[in-house]
Image (cartoon, rainbow, N blue to C red; front, side, top):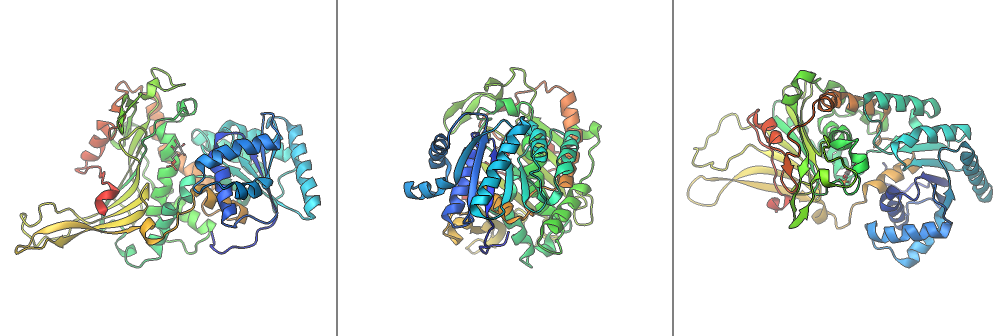
Length: 503
Ligand code: BG6
């Protein structure tokens, strides 16, 4: 993750699933923006592969239309035409071993032309069940060299703990861990990376960052969108697998981890794993006390009528899949003993809001009368991840006037106000890190397995008990009542503050 522009060696990026959604919505727009910023190596080649028959020009045309829609910066024809000279297409069937030999020939050919060895990056942008065949195909064509080959794997990484262990075994038989880049795109978000800077580049917060001062932590990832035509995938995933197992647990690790001794891949990831390993196991008979699930029914979002989850394409009319999950976790170590971490995520909610609330404990003794402190609440730190990007500290001041009357106010920092540049998209950061060979922001095998371990009891119980109350929240609401009850049993409530309230 260094910020200076180191010169990159010649790179060939082979994307499996070249004609798919991920490539056109995320990968190509990210590469285009890296190109605009001058990050790409001088010798660079993108080979999109797929089963569809297409020539290079068809492929470029397809990507151009999507890039105009999804790139964070305007796609200018002149710039695009330079960038698109990197793009090529090959018809490849990932299940056919012979096709990997053809990929290898193509790479050898370009290496001859460039008179240079290349770094070969193989990107799996295909469904998860293709990982095995891709890994085996690369092995059969000897495209696995430790020094020059990297493989990028998209989530979901496994369907449960068992399948994740099996997948890790398959991949690690062919590739060394240092060659494997398991993506969790939340780790590439600026505001998520900023959690480390906030905690470890300031002396101010770390002394209070523990059980003595912090009452509890809330991590929310709320989305307004429903499943957006991804019913086929989502039916087998659900909110717990799709969001909590990866994105929310990773954010929790950044909030809870001990300071690493150095900012490098192994040190950072070791400290995160310490957190996951310390998460208290939830006995299956107690899952109802620690987790709540929900599924949206029809409702209204921003004035538009929205169908319920069970009415979405490719979703069963009796689907038990949760589109909302809330959890209470404890981290059994010295720093966090007794401090609950509440995590929740859901689709078709009232707002798009990703936020971490660090709720501090009340002052030990209040000097002020109850009438002076009507809206008094303990301090809290609010880390806004998206859509607003920033950090706010809620604290108390004396309201102007003759009496001592307290008022809660914000000290706040906004990325958009402090820096007048749009931050890079997560995929820009992550793709560049793969090119630079930096695995810090990627998931290590043991990290993925620990995260599955944390949610396994909940998965087991939810799979075995049919949710008779589904759908239990209306699209456009804040989720099911059971999630409110989960936190209310501890005498707390979810905090839904709008970033706009901090202006
Ligand atoms: C993906 C999930 O990992 O993250 C999606 O599969 C979800 O269901 C998406 O919508 C959210 O990502 P972002 O960056 O839009 O918050």
